[in-house]
Amino acid sequence: MIFGISKSVRNAVHEEAFEICDEDFKRKYCYELIPQRTEQLMNLTYQFFDFSPRVFHQLRRLFGITSEEYLKSIGPENLIGSMVMGNIMSLKE
Image 1 (cartoon, helix red, strand yellow):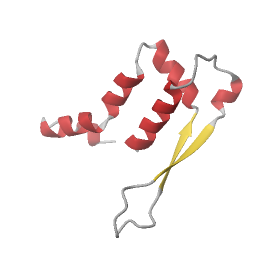
Image 2 (cartoon, rainbow, N blue to C red):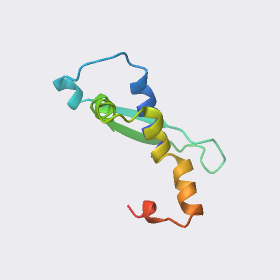
Image 3 (cartoon, rainbow, N blue to C red):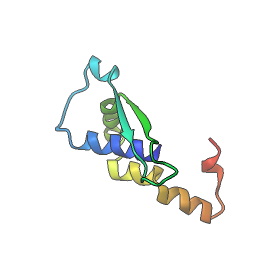
Image 4 (cartoon, rainbow, N blue to C red):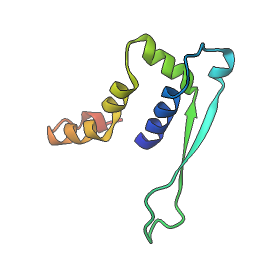
């Protein structure tokens, strides 16, 4: 799931400045995520559905959260760091 969110955030960053319109609330994208190929995972792919990415991008901007900060907060580094420090509450939900 982290990879899908990362792909979504990185795609929204590359768009030029924009104003939110009604259509942005209805947008839905599907990304196909392909894991590294091994014999056990030969035909396995995952789909990630991204709902209203421009809306969420604008919300983060309104609150002063950069894409880099957001990705760092949900990324694997944060998860591993929490596990090492014994804080597994982030894994609860």
